[in-house]
Length: 82
Image (cartoon, rainbow, N blue to C red; front, side, top):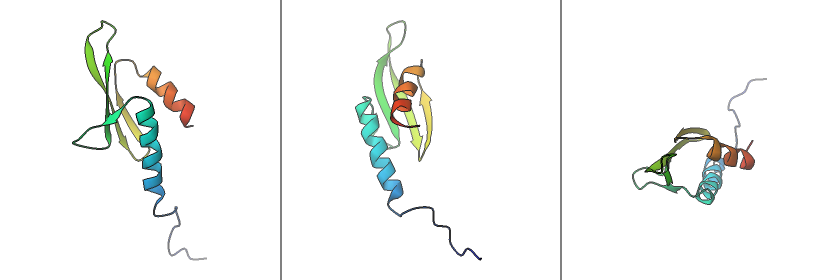
């Protein structure tokens, strides 16, 4: 057998995943930045009660989470997705 083209999924699969993940991020209280819709931001307080912004940079299914304590959001995402 000669494979001429790999069938990874539908052309709209990426858009459907992005839409699903965006709904989850909004449910967690994050909002996309105006500069880049793949950068999600949320106001938070550090342990010493000083304000800062939590950031999640998302590219397809990779997440870079910039936060003082990542466990809370990681557990919430883990409840939604494996």
